[in-house]
Picture 1 (tube, one colour):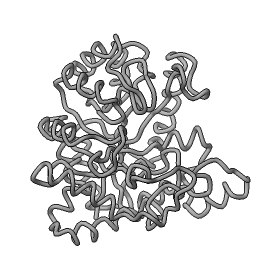
Picture 2 (tube, rainbow, N blue to C red; picture 1 turned 45 degrees about the horizontal axis):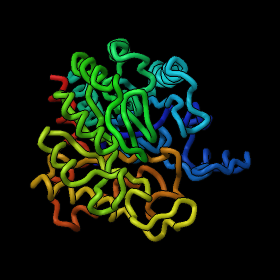
Picture 3 (tube, rainbow, N blue to C red; picture 1 turned 45 degrees about the vertical axis):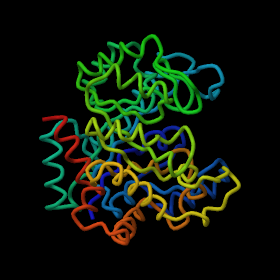
Picture 4 (cartoon, rainbow, N blue to C red; picture 1 turned 180 degrees about the horizontal axis):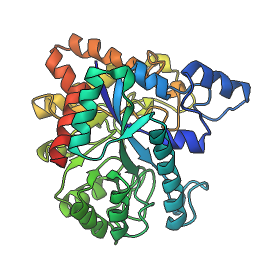
Length: 353
């Protein structure tokens, strides 16, 4: 079944981790093991361009991500927003060269979206992978008005923060709202028609963002706090607010977002299966009273590998197992098609029309 994944950090993997995403999964894993790489996820990656095709992931929301330094942040973060901008532009250049080689197609409007979907239905083997450009954490937008320049570059989705505090908002692991520049960026995003991704916002920042932005919203890769209690997940009230704005929530596969007692580096993936992902999808559907607002945003290879994913997932192609798991919960084919691709296609089509 055709699948849309609303969150993949492909350029981060290529540029920051020096991964050749043209390789088959087995070859890339072997290459990293031969080099003696021991960081989290090394030799355990799940996403390459060939594997996206195997998994029928015909459209992905792909990120640029380049955080700027804040107190307590990662020492590898950019020292300034200007540096953050330069790093993110380099990540964009990676997607552009893939596009020039015919390996991907950047999707930025409804016409291109519909053409891409039609091409994949007609000739999947001969059609490039489709990418929609997003930004995870808005630090590469050096000042609020610069979002218009980014929009001209093809940027269509922005989340204000990531882990920690960005120039515009408090994010995961912090408590607080928007920064002084946050409302200004949201105003410029709305003028430019850029979609707000609410993922990673601290609770106060989440509600302040909704108060300051009336445009389209989504949560690209977010799970349910009712099932896994942690600030990284959204409460039912937050999920309902997204539903009321006709947004879509993509279920994520990072194990600590799926298993309440997960301990990074210690818990064995065998304690967890893709059934937990189906549980989070089902929870959103139950809150909404329909399948209209539930989808997938895997975040696979988002700084981790199979050591921190459900035990029955080897590569991104295994997302197809969610078909059977949702059927076991009583979902019909048309419901599963909505979750796999229909909801994201409808959302972007309506926003861009």
